[in-house]
Length: 154
Image (cartoon, rainbow, N blue to C red):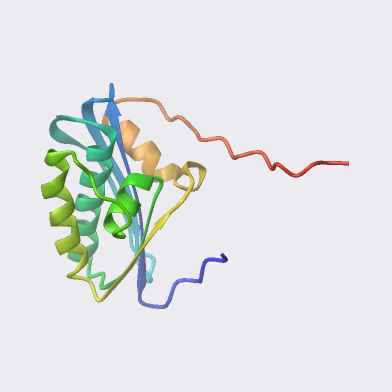
């Protein structure tokens, strides 16, 4: 599937979360870009400790708040967390009770935008949010390698 280009009113948002160790301290990272060149970065820690999925959810929650405060109404959200994308798109449910409240808050928050698309992207297509989530924990950048094509070369 070829991604559609953003509309003239669509905001772009990339999010990522890190737990170190996992479970451990939580680092949140995100990049929000507006249609008129607005650029907002988030790199912060969350209170307490948790797992990587909790960090991803909390990163998205804070990034959505930043986007709303900046005036976003139409949003294209991308993250490399299959957990977050599947759960928020309604394709999965979790038995982890501590994540239920966060997921409910996110669903409510997503419903306040005029339109939202939520897409999974491979880690190598989410480098800035990844870098920001790791930086929040004082961890060095860990660049993702691009997958090698499986096509045979002759």
